[in-house]
Image (cartoon, rainbow over all chains, first blue to last red):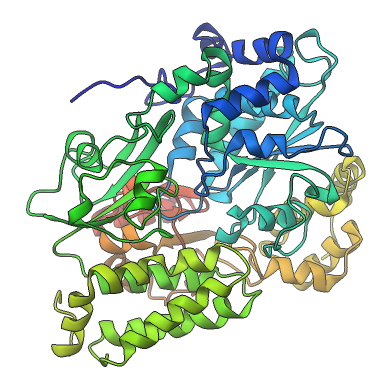
Length: 423
Length: 158
């Protein structure tokens, strides 16, 4: 097993965070220093642009481009928001990152905030991560004391305040525009852009929102340059490392920081310890619940955003959920659809009405009451979901659509045997 | 039951310092929920008055969020994760085990008022599946024996 550089999970400890002092000793807040003293606003954005850093929360939006889209003459105050809502099933990397190096994402937020002259930073965190919220509140105060936050950051005239905002808990709050509504105390329905949040976000003012892991990458890129970052990846199309969360039927489920573009087979076999005894690999969801089942023929796929797109899938959050030959994928899809049905915000019709309909057909299939003509209906309904307002609905049917593409035989067995063949 | 003066004062102070009072709505709901045991009608009214919102606006948030409770609860709220990894690792049988042990259905509260059982979507502990939260503390790699131990301990501490 090769030892790859640990950047984001550097100095990971089993029982505690890296303290501010420890973080500083390993180069922490040097990125901020360089940003403030050397690169200035436009320099930071240019470096991030050149680094090809793509958003790690699932949407893979280019970070440099996002920061660039805040106009120089845009109104103030401006906001920088860290999305620590991490509610994509199978995903727990941000939890581990917060419990390993909280200052890394804080430093990343300050640098990104500095580049767009943001006055206020907000960390939006899910209620299940209360211990993480407490750590962040405490460490933000320490960063303030050390002069990295507050007024005159590192002797400059830049000022930034960061607060922790606790969510009441709903999956949709992870969606950018829904999160803005949540932060403003409104019902968290997504809003269809334009206007884009970087133009009119929180309270109608420019807002940049990124994921915990994305922010954590920023200090390193500023310190060591875009070429170094790109060089961390194993593929031409990838950049940086990626924190993969592996769960399901493997021997060592957990969080692994590996080069972007590493092969799926290497992650599962070398790092996650291979399949459980008596289990054979059938499929995985490569990037959370809103990605499709990746069949065995792609077991060697290179895990970066481009390579997964090429095989009709998505890297999403990098949450690899592994299913074995004994697990019913109709049952799994039913479970995933139940999740999305419950978590739909209910605002627009395709999602609110379509998902319960799909769930009902899947439930009948799983119970052995399915019919051949369910399949074209499921295919049609899956297409309708793409008409919804936000990315929730297309993500919600990704497992279903891939089930019908790659595992249709398993669906048909449920119909012909009039029962679940796995029971 | 009125909101105690001290509690009200501390909330008003916090609200006065906010750029936009409404942004604190979840925090305020959580505080009142803690005080009343759940977010009762009176609490919804209190939140609305404190933040200058209509009770209806508060209600549509209160009923939206998983961790805001509009009905009375037991002392310990058990949220069992029913998302796909926990499902694959035995959620169904664990749920049945807990229901049987506590003699309640999903959504119910035990007669002694100690435990409420609720489902929850993926809690981000898939590496420790099957998992659950009790009063937001996580318990993982659950087995019937482990559940026995956890529930007995909580009972004895109640």
